[in-house]
Image (tube, rainbow, N blue to C red; front, top):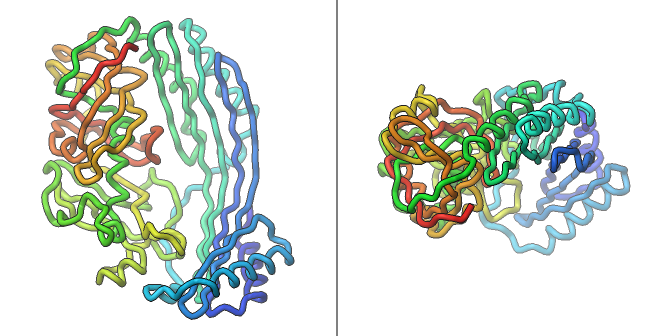
Length: 444
């Protein structure tokens, strides 16, 4: 990975070649290693390393960006020239602001040697532990184990010099039985907190418990959604907490800010400094990220703003902008739900009759303003009766509004860093809701 000093050297070389009014450099550099397994054996191991340098120049309100993956002097000269040529051909942007000046960033520590030092053998050993669990139970396992290291840097001619490095590890496993399946996944900056054997035990147990699934009629049921299911469904809400989305009237919050949209027990914030969060403490322009209270006791309170959107809307920038130029503006990326003390087991014990959902998948948005979503359950759907899980059931298709969902939360569990397939990891609790609309039953 490029150290901070090397990023500064590259930027100094870029400035030598630039005659622009303003110049900006974005740097992404890192490694990615992946071990893939299926049918209880490792099928692939790959590793890659790469660097991306992206240069933006500004000439009299005209701006454009050019990118290279080489850092030699000639490549840097060419990428500056390409950015300059593109910028001069643009129409002036009347809303383009001068680049930000020096910033102060909140300290975050998300680089762990245990992750950076992980080898293919380490990943293979973890996979072997997981596979042994499946084989012991007469099941078949498939999944991935990945480890990454990376840096992000933003430097500009007005004095921004932001630098961030991190690591990430992710283990995902699906366990197949004769007529059932189970799944578990964990994502964390520190690989030492990922226990492949425990995740395999969980996935195997779900597959075992859901053997011989029974068919239930579709309808509205009291439903317990584990945190991964909550993550993948509610992830569709948060791109709308954007000032630019509000300006474009493509946000479900249009005309609704300050209104009570969700239940009293729903409070959500964006907080890059939360201990279980990930990502840099600055945005795509190098502006310091601020904590934002998105929802407070059910009321839509605040939006995220990049500098340009904030200027246009008379607000303060919150440090959530994407690299310029872009047409999306900004979005919250570090979602943290408030929760409660309840465990999933306690929610089950408090349920007379209902459904337990491990995860959701293939989710698509049907109505953006109502946040109506459709999708299916997967890898462990269960019938609850008199406070106990009775048996597995065949999967359902659902049609449900994420807004309505957050209006009928009866119990919330302890928030945790959840990982799914449809949304990026966030801090969410499992939820028990008074009704969830299952519209069709599948044959598996």
